[in-house]
Image (tube, rainbow over all chains, first blue to last red; front, side):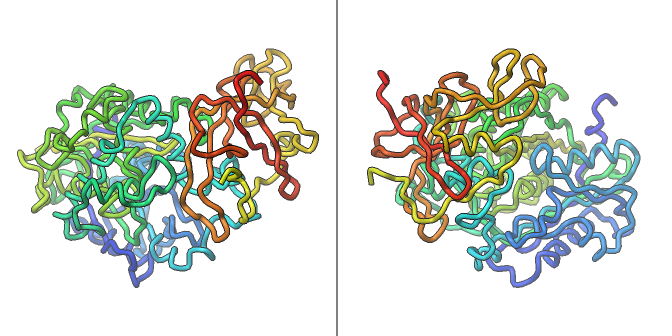
Length: 394
Length: 143
């Protein structure tokens, strides 16, 4: 087969309780997610022979990445043919793309992939745990930003988003629809962090973080862990869930890989990966039943809608105007669990989990009608970008 | 309000390296120093010793005019640290000499409400420890 990802399937998903105060350790959350994913696939611990994650243990107190492969592998006593973390890759999905390569190279058959965040608890002692100290020295990727009191992803994204607004002419009430729709979806998801619907007035009454980013454009730091099992297709046929293949991936880097110099801040790095993905499938954007598009900030989702071809460049404003197209019963339901904006910052793996929930018909009150079979997924942020298509094959 | 840069919280600073030292210390002599290819005159930023245009390794710091244009900006309201005075402007400034050299900076010495994309700005420097931080302020188009 020309494209090896088509021989790889997601066979199981798991998620810990997602909260603002876990009360248990990040490794414990990770075990919850991992064990649930293994059982969901109908596998045993002994079937897992690969592990992959993004970004690996940060070994700091920020809660950004408190668990790496060594801690989880040892806790589960797994015996592996292949394992790797990754950070300098196509965003959080790099862990999936690497696992596809490892499975295709016959190094392993069932790969456990996980992403754990512990930022809610870490922030309760936030100043002590901050990555920056006034007068201190700043590390990549903030070395060119922190000297200007630009300390967070929000500062970087506000600079890109501002350029997008300038070039596209999108209106704030159009941008707001991403947050409103996510919250509406979250109201139907018992596991979401914020479930009370918000209005346009609520959106505009909330503080501006860094213009044009308002509070509800920013995702919610949480404690939680998501795990998935990636399996070789012939092995996946013996597992429990409907066969759900990775149809095509976009993993490329076609731009300057720089948070300051990336070629086009208004579109970030998404156009290149989207072009690669659509070049590896006969499907087209019209075939997508549900879109789980990264929403670390609502701007990311807007970028993805355009780059993945659901609407033309700089026309997302009109596409999401009023919200009906992207609602659960719209032509392109997005971020059906509430996304990171309302369900919590599972850092792209919330999107992966939810895509499977939808394709496997487990969405309960938020289930997209019409038996969805094709999901599009993206991640984004500055030079980081990745995307893939998931197709239920039964 | 008309001087948004008088923040009480000290700036977080870069580590000085062989490659970035000219950029972060040129302000001591009131000069903005940007790496430039001595073979084909292309500016290379962030500073490094390879010209991606002509493949020369002869690249080094040269002074630029200090004029640039605001490519994008944000008014930051979030108080990331105690003592940080908000709001303040963070911007991408592109150099007048070459528009693919993009600097993060603060726009200072102006009413922040008047800042616009496309506005012409000129560099000035603020010393912090061993660093001279390049900042930009609006200038009239005739400057």
